[in-house]
Length: 142
Image 1: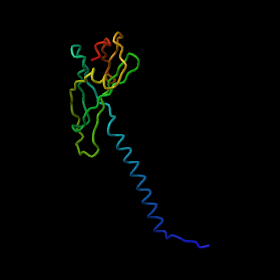
Image 2 (image 1 turned 120 degrees about the vertical axis):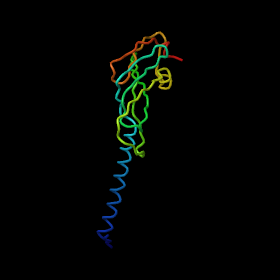
Image 3 (image 1 turned 60 degrees about the vertical axis):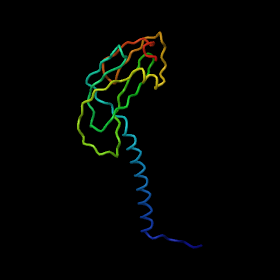
Image 4 (image 1 turned 180 degrees about the vertical axis):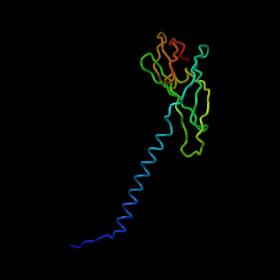
């Protein structure tokens, strides 16, 4: 029976490579998770009945972020959220920037595959804003 001993340098280098690989994978996973998900800070929310759109104003954390709209439904309550999206590879100064954005309600409902009954009344809201709109389901369908 022959025993082979590795020198300490080989063992240490393999351990460092394995540790580096694991840390790199963990860091990449966390970076991707942070790309989308910060709720935009809203200062004003208005509903335009004629176009069935929300117009929101607020602030975002820097000029390089863009907004992603998400619609969630809980029965007859439809909540729209505005999330900040950014590329972690992009270099950008951290500077609070004001924004004004129109939320296309009908389009978001359509693309989010929400279940809308034409004769049902729905309550619409944006983020954590107390402003709500009551709308008949037929107005939300194309």
